[in-house]
Amino acid sequence: MSNIMEETISGAIVRSFFKKLEDHLSVDVGIVGAGPSGLVAARYLADAGLKVAVFESKLAPGGGTWGGGMLFNEAVVQDDAVAILNDFNISTKDLGNGYHTFDTVELASGLIFGARKAGAVIFNTVCVEDICVREGVVNGLVINWNPVRRLDMHVDPLVITTRAVLDGTGHPSEIVHKAVDKAGLHVDSPSGGIMGERPMWMEDGERTTVINTKRLFPGLYASGMAANNVQGGFRMGPIFGGMFKSGKKVAELILADLRA
Image 1 (cartoon, one colour):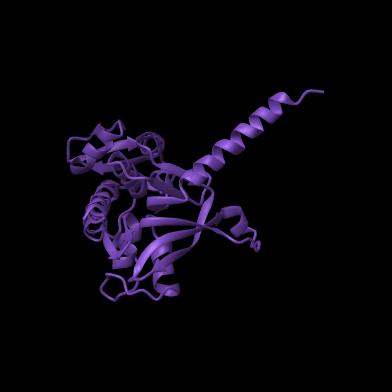
Image 2 (cartoon, one colour):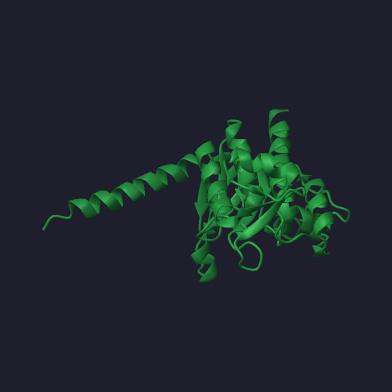
């Protein structure tokens, strides 16, 4: 009995994936979390010619965008952030009052497609267990399969070396926690640690999401809700202009630092 098709398909998947992984064991920018700010940053960084890998622990990239507000798959963006969605060819509906609505399924799929077509590679179902710090610089990510972590299996990880790491993990700011709690790093926040996210205040949360997007330590950056959590900003709910602008801002910061 011939198994040519089965062997061809399995072989193609294995060879193609391992080539992709091998090609991204060393990258310019490692982004943890494929949410809106991380995907926007990935697209602009890859467009600028940097090698970018995004590591997403869930099966589906897109972060918290898919469900919109309370599973109504619509959300809102302000006038001043619509240009970013235009860059991704994501459609919006102008409400005529400074705000626009958009379909969150189109948003998530559009951000993913835009980042990929710019050249960023997304590794889904991959968790980041730890970071690497050498001579006062964050310069790597320690990765494993998320099912391995969930099953609490004792399986050693692999390492991705980086020139810059972006924490785009959202509300938990998981990577900055590893930097502060495990590595003992003093980050650029009012306390030197993680201030914690404050309650809902949409207007201020949108404003501070962008302000709080910054380099926290040499080689380490945060965007989106991860940045707000570190700096003690307010949450903002299903309005996304600050998230998109944060992703673009952090891409510009990383580009400036890596080209300095």
